[in-house]
Length: 399
Image 1 (cartoon, rainbow, N blue to C red):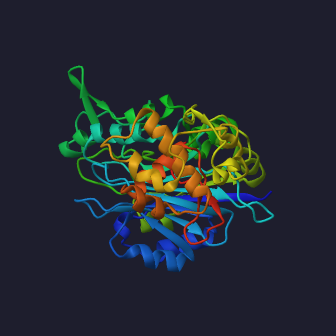
Image 2 (image 1 turned 135 degrees about the vertical axis):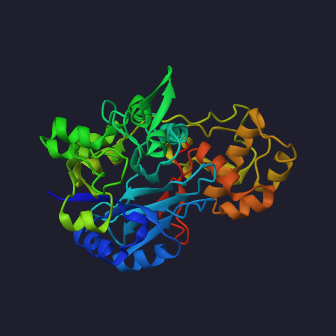
Image 3 (image 1 turned 135 degrees about the horizontal axis):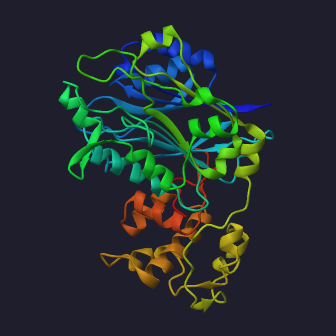
């Protein structure tokens, strides 16, 4: 059976990169999520792995950053990369990928992939980070999350009395109802958003009880619990769960020496992924304004021949302003809302379909390229890959 492999590993402060890379390269993974990547390591790691590397937004404070690596010419094809300046501690690395079909074409749907490292010193921040993950859990969206959560599955975790490392106890618990509780809130937030934890799924549905095994706690620290724990976990959208065929906590003495965390290896059925990523789905997109029929502009009369099918069905009406040269007039207000926003969505989408780039539209409307991409995504536009002009992509899953 042809499979797609995703690997996750928190390599302790990047101190054993050569050993870690040598092991990861042998796994022949199609996508790797890594935590605690150190400054200057991303490029060399990517080169040694023979993969393309995508690092997270650099935030003040810790230098233990997150990264995602994608195999060159592999079954997963990079679509878009996202910066997360909102992050209170470690920003997650976040890209979207499409599946390369056997004929070389790309799947119409994409998967949002996230490599994250939850804040070690604040249960409240960890909860916020988990709540952010729910933004990728909307109906019809597909996501895979690999994180060092620095917290526990619901129902797991140590009793916290009697330990002398009070900082660690405080970090791994939260205060409520007059006492401290094991922090399992990220897990509960993710499952509330209907994400499926891969270890649980493999144990329950794939007859792989070891998939629930511990990933950390092998290094001994004075004053801390000595019990092993699973703080590194992967979650995926429920629609993707049937594609998971194997989930492994990779545990050997050699791996324990390299890092204080163990790697996770998830394998997915290529055929099942292909079926999922080619399904037609209902996804919310804003309606276009119902104002004037297309009768006066030859350039726009044939708009439906250039639009994607879902937008073509809505393109029998257009706003008053029909041309890209009219975009600045639409942008003279500080806020673009209501009918004006719908009008701009149509104009920008038509301009993009006619071959104008995001930067062209940005320069003409005096708005940022990020704003233009948001507008295009709201209109259901499939963006062209940078530098190709032909290969499609959605970008961030805002539709």
